[in-house]
Amino acid sequence: MERILGVLTLKAPIYKEIAEDENATMTAAIIVVVMAIFGGILGALVLGLTAAALPPGAGQTGSPVGVAISTVFTTILGWLIGSAVFGFVANALGGRTNTGEMLRVFGYTQIFQVLNIVPCLGSLAALILSVVGAIIGIREAAEFSTGKAVVTGLIGLVILFIINIAIGFVLSPFL
Image 1: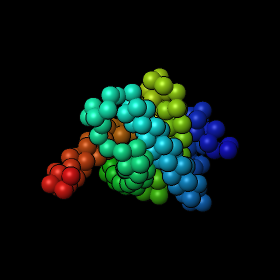
Image 2: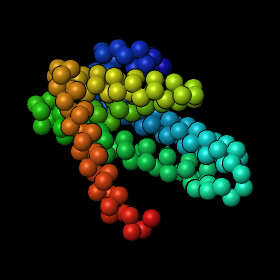
Image 3: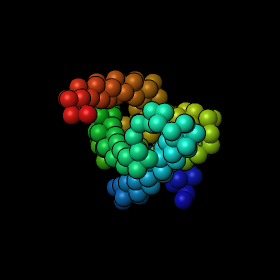
């Protein structure tokens, strides 16, 4: 709980402690899975409520169960791939980190997703705090400046965007 509170309050020493503690990987994974399930349930509820508000046959796409399952799957996969990409970019920019450290830091920062329960502003707050937490986490894990952490984040996002486009292009004939 102390580490979760430290992440929520954006305490840099806690981020560094998490990055360096290999025993924190399982806790990070648990946080990711719990938040992924939470996000999946929220997505399913929103889809169900939206469908209930529409007239019968008014173009509902997907099922709530499908939304929940895909949210869990994509959240976990995104955590794994994203951590590897950000670790790679940080090292390329002279940082001293690895995928394990990034997995732990980004796993703990998933705790901000709990704010999505608050309509409208909760999602915005979750996004902003996740970005700030990610920058602190990258900085602390890679042991470099905030500026380099921001650059690492931006380059990592571009790479992840390209990966998403490539995956979408490859999978589009099957969807």
